Image (cartoon, rainbow, N blue to C red; front, side, top):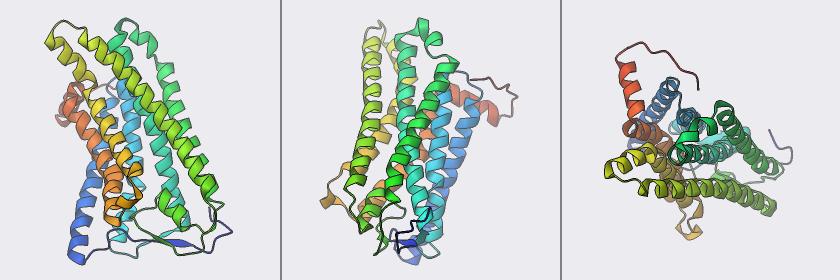
Length: 310
């Protein structure tokens, strides 16, 4: 992946340039967060193998995406606390590629999960026919295809850029805007590709999610009893919380004014997006979803279960 037109072979990460006691505390904190992220999302993948609903099929994909996003960032972060704060040219582009891949795919997976909740609540008699196995696999495959397309559309133009120095990135990982700022060639086309692809994928997914929840809320309001309304809404509350957390963080991270940008602010939003959210997602589904909690209890009690196919 090395660009033959560049004189830069590595980048220096300036994030978390603190003293030894602070770095020691942060190292332990991020190590524990990463361990919880891996454990929680692996547990979700195992649990969903025992549940046949399409919602859990998409939840397994979401858990895998969260593990990928954290794994491409946190291990390198732990290393730079004690070693040199450098990242190779190729590793930097791999990080950016994975972030685009997981981001684009997760947008589509969250939209598919919203449509699944719409079909379950608004079209209950036709739910099995609508969300059949082949359609679910088609949606998942389409989500990954969009993610790869989004990643390639943004990463390929970057490989043509020249990097003549300086090579300092004001973050603990490689970020698309920070990398473009270091280029000594024109980056207008890169920004255009980023804005068009990102806006299209994010807005399309958000429209699907919003339209789905408008229909869901409309259906819930038509129910007679408060208990029926509560139980029906509880089936999609976990997904709604994850959507708000994911898109809320992404909006604050990418749409804040440049005047509000600083190393500390950039670090905060990067941590929230790449570390905190992937760690919280399995916790949200574990606490809010009765079926997930029941399977976890049975697994922790070592009761035999026969996996069901999705």
